Amino acid sequence: MNIYSSLADDFYCNMNLNTEMLLPNARETVLGFFERVQKTYPSMRNFYTRENGDFVMEEDKDQGHQRWLSLEPRRVCSGYLNPPDLDDAMGQHLLVLQLVPYMLSVSPLDCEALDYMMGFDFTYSGNHDQLVAEVLGGHAATQSLLAVPGCKVLNCEPSITIALEDSCRLQARLMVETRTSAYQVRQGEYADDPISVYFTVRQYGSLEPEASFEETLRRLRRCCEELLDDYVIEHVLRPLAQAISTR
Image (cartoon, rainbow, N blue to C red; front, side, top):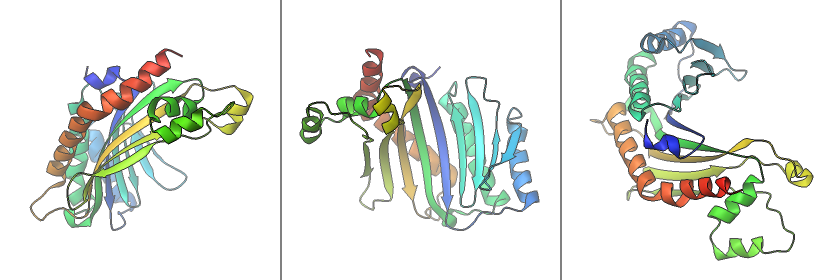
């Protein structure tokens, strides 16, 4: 069990590789790529094509945890919901990055961006935006609006992106996603939907000639976990969890 499993109802660790050029979509190439990943993870046996043409392979959804992999026109995504150990998720992501150069013809030059993302879902039956505004909307201007008599918050989804080096090619982004509609606020009836917090560290642009996808992802992971541990957990995740527990 890792430390992140106790912070939210669900958490996930994803890798996204965005490419400048279109990825191959020939039947033999696509199936060969997914079959190679399935050879390492046989439980990923559900393969299908979305209506928009994306290819997806995933584990069964009723286990409490789930590996998945998708291939889009210009993006390869690898994810693991509720991994028992983050190294398990990292092993999956690294395998995918090891395969894409020779199975999908993706080179470090073709990299538009490489992401390492940690996501956290907090189930809450109530006005998501009101809760987020009260917990995370600490600016005086925001708090003053909450004092308007009879007001009800309809949208509050904080998002901030910061550069982590002078070139601005290494960035970190914190984003909160709510799922409350104006109709639900008007009726006063809410579903048990999650408030999601996404924290992503992204490397933009082609990789350096001597760099590899795998080593770059390892560096993104270290950076992401350091920032999570030093800033995001105590100032975002725990306050949200505590506020929900008291409602």
